Image 1 (cartoon, rainbow, N blue to C red):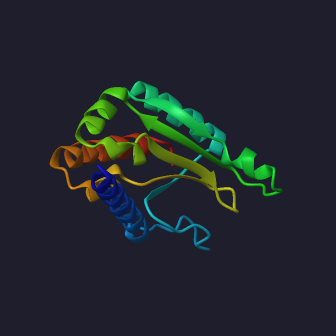
Image 2 (tube, helix red, strand yellow):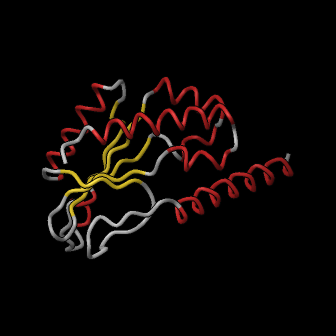
Length: 165
């Protein structure tokens, strides 16, 4: 029993290390000429404020068979430290898709619901950023999980490209 627990913890640790490695080496896009923001994932410059974009995405998520499962208001939290930043994160998912993922991979909670960040840079430009699920789920090396992740990639791409630019 103890050996199994150690092996499980080792497998989980290796999976987390793989996800972190993917995040470091994932596609990087700089949203501004000054390069204030770099890092993994898909970045799309959009028109409108952070608040307007957040409202649009919430509506689009609902209209496309998904739901907002949580929100993180980073700007409000960071204001407590004196930093003024416009940043909102929503966690998007679909319970039926989640059921499929968790049935195949109990560690799916590390990745779903999918995190979408909406933020403004120092010049006031608004961006939407997310890490494609396929980049994150690839570390689990399970064909059905990879198939679902690619479907989620397509759905997210369709969703964010409908935003006005």
